[in-house]
Image (cartoon, rainbow, N blue to C red; front, side, top):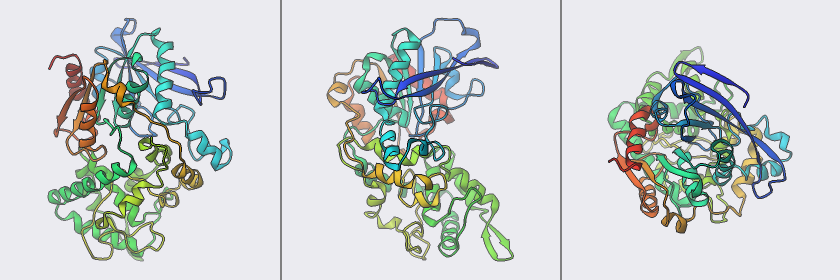
Length: 442
C-alpha cells in the first residue's frame, strides 16, 4: 500500500502485491501486481464486501476513475471495489516493447508471456483476495475478456467467489481460435453493411481511401504504416455503441489538398493512429489468439488463415499481404474488419515491430492447457448473471448462449439496447440489472 487519494465522493488507495510469475513454481521469480481500491467516501470505514473488476482485452489495464462514473457509481453503493491491472498491463510489471527485451531473447520473452493468460490472472486474484478479505469470497465483475477470466475463475477456484457478474464476456467453452473467427467474419460483414445502410455515402469514402492507400505510402505521426489492411481494422469501432457515428465522422473529412495532390489529412491520421495504436496494449496483439487456445495446438495466426475463407474481405495492391482491400481495386464491397490480429501488424505498428519474433513464437507455440472445466461448470453453485449483447461484434452471441446453458444456475440478460461497451456507456443501468438478476430480484 503506497498511497491514498481523494476525489469528490471517493477514497482511492494503491495496493501492490508480489505474485509468482509461474504459480506452479511459487519459489521462483515473482512479479508485481498493482490494484486500486475505490470506496465511497461516506463508507470509507464500513466493513463492505469486495468487488474485483476484471478489464477487457487482453492487455488492457483497469480504468482510471474520475469520480463516481458509470458502473462504478452503482457498485460503490454495495461494495469496496478493486480495479485490478492484470499482469503485464498498466502498473503491473508492464510487458511492452521497452520492457520485454529485459527478459532476453524472443524465445525467452515468449516463455515469459506464456504465463500471462486467464489461468494465471485468476491465481493472482486468489492470492490477492486472501490478503485483502481475510479469506472471504468476493464478487467478480468481468467485462469482455474479463468475463472470460471470470469463467476460468468459476472453473478453477469457485470457492473464492461470492457471485459473478459478466458483461459481454461469455466465451465459447470449446471454441478454438478458428471457430471464433469463422463466426466473427460474417458478423464483421453484417456490421459493415449496417453501417453503410445508416451512412450510405461512407462506402464511396472508404473505397476512395483504400484506393489512395493502395497507391501511396502513408505513415502516420506515431510511425504506423497505414496500409489498406490496417485501414480496414477501423471496423473495430463498429462494436461500440457510438462507433458507427465515430467512423462516419472520421471518413467524411479524410483528405487534404496539398502541393503533391490529395493526401490523407493530418487530423485524419492522428485520429486513426489513436484507434490503431498498440503502444499502450501490445499484449492485445501478442496474446490475443492465445485466449482461445486450450487444446494444446498452436494458433498459427488463425485470423489471417481463416480470412482466406471469406474472399469478400480480400486485399489487393500490395505484394506482401499487408494491405490493399476489397474496393481498393474497384471490385466488390469494401468491408471493414474488427477484432483480429494479423502477422503484417508486426511490420505496420511501431509498438509491435521489436516484438515480431516473440509474436511469431507465440503463434507457433503448442501445449496450451484448458482454461475451462465444463464438468465443474455444470455443477456450479456460485450465483452468476451475464449480459449478452445481441450480435456482439467481439464475442459470438451463439457461443455465449451455449456457455450460458452449460453453467449451472447462470442467468442471462440478452439485449440489443447496448453494444459490447454497454458497461462503459450505460454502466449503472447494466450493472444494476445484473445485480438484480444474480440476487433473484428479476
